[in-house]
Length: 144
Image 1 (cartoon, rainbow, N blue to C red):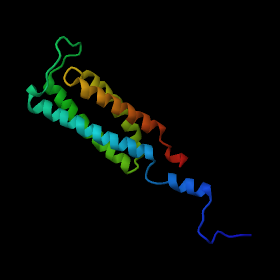
Image 2 (tube, rainbow, N blue to C red; image 1 turned 90 degrees about the horizontal axis):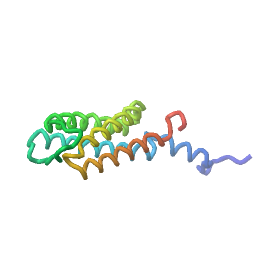
Image 3 (cartoon, helix red, strand yellow; image 1 turned 120 degrees about the vertical axis):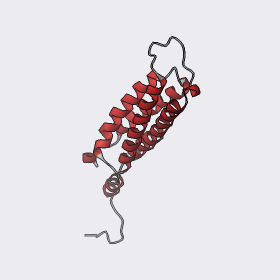
């Protein structure tokens, strides 16, 4: 029979080796979005804590909270989301589950953040939706 001495590999072997890296393209996509979204959330938290005059709140919004308190919530969430996003680059399986949970919490927090930064809150809600989608559609480690 013929041997594969020329170095050519079968299609199944190529597909298997392409999926066996530290993560799929979806995990890298989710990791980048989580790091970006986490840093933006962190910076929004710092801005809210540092100077309350940066944000102008809409009057008579149903979910009205103290801006400094929201700043601390965003600061902590930003740090945790950024670290979980970085863990996705390492291929940590726990980071996928934590990433989905954090993206859900971040979507809720940004919905409540709408009176302070309407456009940016909606952008971050969309980014977190893409994070959830990417983390849920990425191939599982057992499927690699």
